[in-house]
Length: 628
Image 1 (cartoon, one colour):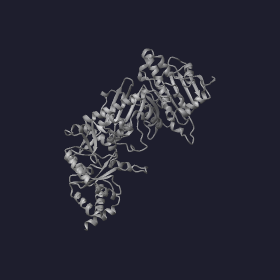
Image 2 (cartoon, helix red, strand yellow):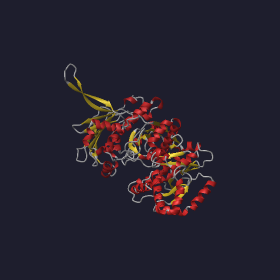
Image 3 (cartoon, one colour):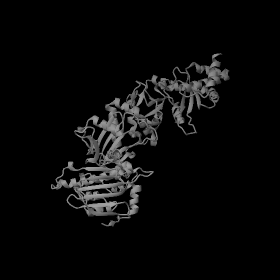
Image 4 (cartoon, one colour):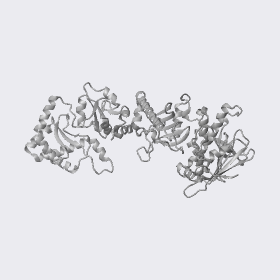
């Protein structure tokens, strides 16, 4: 036996392996198990052509044993094993992958899921171990060898005894420190949890030794220790099974167990894609928002597997923000991983998978909208706001993807309609899509401006979410029809003749309106008559890009000292008796005109859901006029 040095700049590279490449120490077990799985697959591949091997797929297994007293954990397989040269080559050269060489040399091994690529995973054992031993014996040899190392200083290889073929990796777990509690990796239940998390879908059974106490026959209150090996992994992933052999409860139970939900999802999507990017996906649309959905703590993303091994708990690159509520996983053999297998190279494959996942989610939502309206409306009540944010974000780059998924409550039956349904039901000659915004449907219906639109037989979309108007502003139009706010000053449903009569009225009252505007200290941009209010005396409208509701939403946001102000117009019903009264006051009593002006402005604010700047003055003016 002699001490050998690692090839390459060993100490520097080993230090990097232990301290830099992996961010979570717990993945050492994933790497050692994956190596064991590769060894089993190699021997299984040989058995397909070498009948003398005489092993069936069910004969292969991985065993884990824990010696808590001596701080040892070992992982054993009955795979191909290694001879002295292979041991020196694969473990003496950091970043030398025997699995990669196997794939390169065996073209027919395409269908064998060899996990290892880089030959670095084995060294992750040194993150939790101060000494690692590898005992291995090739299937077709009687000679066994033991590889030992305490880290970067080097390793030894010597002959040893081993009764069976295969490989056993024995890790001597480090002593606990103030910062690191390595003893957790000697706990059976912690190891079981790690196997379930990372290696649940390794195709071979992973068994661990458990000691239980069983009563001794014929002896009362006496027990004996019984050692048994229990299989810890599921082996065959649900998403790899045929859809025909799965029931809805299989999908739902998997979802609740895997993603910690107490309710079944609204919908599941099980898909297999081949082509430029080959992958399996199992996606779920939950029934409700996660409790932390709109907090900084929420992380979007799908679980990412490579050949059944968990690579990332949440891969955010697989989901656009507007579909961030989707839960599920993707399993692909085509991923370009970095050497730690913890992170992805941002390459074309990942983008192709993400784009395909996005299209699949959209198509399934469209299908649900058409075939199961009740379920879609339930989904939209939970996640519709996120779709609207998706239209508004990034300057509307995704608006064409999402516009047909939107629902709005309609004034006709107080039910959800799509934009397409609205346009299909438009009156002949109608050129615009009308909407009104407010805190609730009941308050929107109280807006005076709605009456004139509904009297014309036009349908109104009721917008109650803060993001609604911003989304429609970004859409601008749908199917060539522009969106028009009924509270916008530009709304005009009059005939040319009626419009001319109104223009003449406003021209004649120009001086009175200037007086009223000055009375309001320029709180409004203009005062004018209107004939769209039916029985209401007054209303407040806006002109320009910022509506009254948008002003409230923007000013409610924290951290901005510069408040946004909509350009408002005080509109007075030209057919209401108050219009004639104002004209008389302007001619004979400007002091009282000022009081009327303030009252009308306060009234318009209240109707529009805005607060009154000076409630005390408002009350005083009412009482003063009531006592005259």
